[in-house]
Image (cartoon, one colour):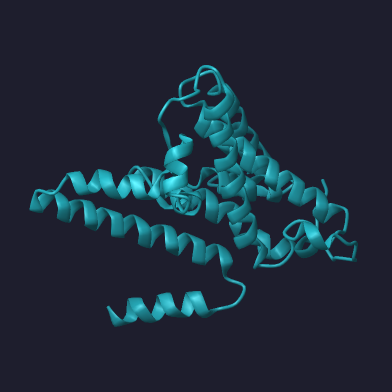
Length: 240
């Protein structure tokens, strides 16, 4: 246990380690919720599971959001199961490790957070104004909006980056394109809010990447719109 604690402390103290820190937070939150749910089930307090879920998931109804405004942050750390956790971490690792090579490592935390927030806002707007969804109680969970922000930013900045798997390689932009097409195909379904959140995160990643390509200071122009200014920024982009 001491070795685990020492490893975690080292990872969170180490500079330039943003995407690993995000992955560790997801793993820790998953196991915390798993242990909590298991304990409640064994002790016969299953209703506590639903209570904790409501406290963490992002709601679609305005009154619920006023009661639980913190859910705009906490919702992305809820996973429906181990399979969802695995794929979220896999995609985050696949694309997130490229961010430090592109700009600055701390930007992955800001990009992740902004993608998460914009994704939840898009989800909320859909359930407020779209006739098929207006007034329906639904919850948004999972980090997909934030992951899509990182994924699209990497693909725009490094379009020729390839994924090597066994005996073949595949451009990462095709992986991102396949995921985007999947999200678009699910828009005419009852889960449209979740997929619109992913598209909202994708928009954040695209804007981030365009600012990088235009040699703008991301810290000033993207994450602090009140201090918009142009500066020179070194960006390494691989062109095909």
